[in-house]
Image (tube, rainbow, N blue to C red):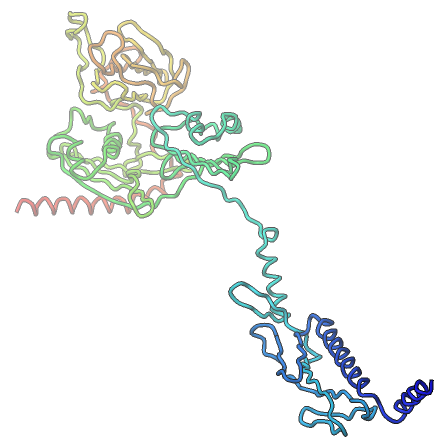
Length: 529
């Protein structure tokens, strides 16, 4: 018992005068564990800040930051842990000085990072290839650009796709629409939408039909190209379709030519560079005064001034003859084209007399005269002689037959040996007959009024005929007269109100004709030398 008392006494004495060595060691270990827990909490508490790693006294501080981002400067502070027996208040230490203590202390080096308080950390976008750092302003601009490029912000307009089909021989609109993958119902609606749209049905080989359709195959536009200068455009509307004809304008240029007849008008005109249409127009202008089948002689001369029409810098076609001169067996004939206020054009002599007579000398473009007007002619079909009270003009089947003058149809039908026949009445005195037709013009019927030059039928060999030709008769008060020799009545002259304007138009044209004639004479003399 005495021994137990002494042991307890010794323990009390040691607690007051002297600390036990084991208690100091326990305090050091406990403080170390507390410090480690504090630093671990600091490292995991703020995830937006760069990571901070606490090291043992023997290790160097390690700071991990985002790639390609400069690391902020770090400062080191020493924290001294007091050992048993040291003062309760730890002295202040800096990175370059160590706190002075009576006894050694355990020191821990802590690496701290100071970030600017006025600037937020930049956003970091990582890709497999690189890391790009964007400032807040750049990040906002990138967001706006993404919105512009998004599908919801872009509005696309379907301009459609053009498809084209050429009109082939034997084609019709139903076949063309089928090849274009358009429905028959759509064709029916278009054709019946307007009078202009009905013209779509009048297609010919060589023309084209173009359509513009959207992604669903719906029609956006249809264009029927009839020629290089004319097209029909059809557009869908809310309830139907609109149709419009477009004509491209042609550039008009004035040209002139001259020639001398050596064998025939057609061959001589070809050598002078005239087309067949211009040659026929020239013959029609002077056809009332000159019989081009009987009265043409070698040495006759012609000159003309005409228009040429150009499209995109290239000649597209010939225009009208503006002025012409024909010298037939030494007799000079001149004609000037003039258009009145109603748009009706005709040809007049320099004095203002109409070149047009009341009747055409020949109502068809013929190759030759196969039979003339005579009192006795051997009929090739009947095999006997009988009077031939008209003129036979040989021409190919289907050649257009023109009305010799203004008049009215008093007969259309089959008439014995004449075959298919049309008879016209002109005023109270004159009638003309056209026989052996292959067919009639559909618009020409009994009672129909016709104008001079209008097509009334086509050459054939119906009735008593051995070949295609036109049998033409001219009657005055019911009496047959020879169409080749009768003096035809003239048409009305130029109206007095147009006289001044006609002189203004004709004067420069006549002067140009004189110049062309002088040039032709000079060239002829040059060739004779």
